[in-house]
Image (tube, rainbow, N blue to C red):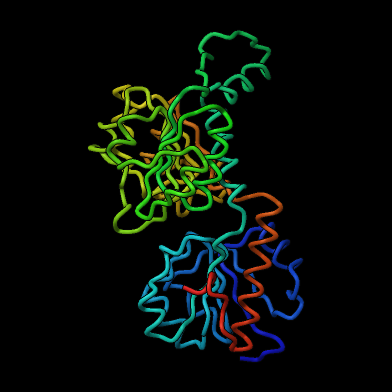
Length: 336
C-alpha cells in the first residue's frame, strides 16, 4: 500500500460518520471515498483502487463480496463497530484480507442506553411525553413498577454486561448473570450471582441480552426460552437483533406472557434502521406488528451513539487503516 496516503472506501455512511472520521487524528493522511449505500457483492466493484474498505453492521461482507474486493486490491476490512457477524472471516483469511474492528468504543454508552430504555418503557415516559404535548395530563395507564428489589438477568458479562450489572445493583436489584466464561471473582466483588440460562430466565423480572451473534446464540430467545420466563417479564436487547426470534416474541406479547420489550436492534433491520422511511409504507410486517404494541419500545440501533463512543470508533478505525497501510501488526484487540 501507499503508506503516505491509503485509499479507503467507506460504506453505509451518514453525516455523523463523515464528521467524526474526518476529525480523528491521522484522518488527513487518508484519501476517503464515502458511500451512503451498503456494501454487498452487487456493488463491491466500486472499490477498485482502494486499499481498505470501512464497513458497518449492515454491510454484507460475504465470500462473494470478499472475492471481488480481493480482486480489486483490497487488503483490509475495517469494521467501525464491535460486531463482526456480517463478515465471512474464513473467506477473508483465504483471500489474504485482514479484518479489524472496534471492540471497546464505549461500553458505558450501550449500558446506559439499556437502562434508559428500561426506565422509559417501565414508567411509560414516552407515552406520557406524547400525552402532555397534547395537553392530556391524565395518569391513567401510566403505572410502572419499582426496580428496587426486583431481579435482573444479564445474559453475557463482557464489558457492557458488567457495567449494566453495576447500574442495576445501584438500583437495589438482585442481579443474576449467565456467561459461557464466568468470572467468579468479579461476580463476588460486584454482588452478582452466576446461574444457568434456564435458571436465570425463570427467576428474572428483567432480562437483558449482551452477547454477540453466533450460531450458538442465534434465536437464543425463542418459543421455549420465552416460556421459561416469568409472566410479565421485561425483555431488553441492545446487542444483535437475531438473538430474538421475532415471531415467537410477538406471540408471547399477544398472549400477555411478556410484559414489555425494549429493543435497539431487530433481526431484519437492514434497509430499515438508519434510514428515514417516514414517507413510505413499512414493508416488514413483523416490525410493523411490534410497533403496534403499547408495551414495546424500539430505537433504531442508537445505543452506541454518544460523542465519546463516536470519537473512539473513529480513532481506532483510522488507526487500523493507517497500520494496515504501513503493513504493521495490528493491535491484538482489534485484529480478528
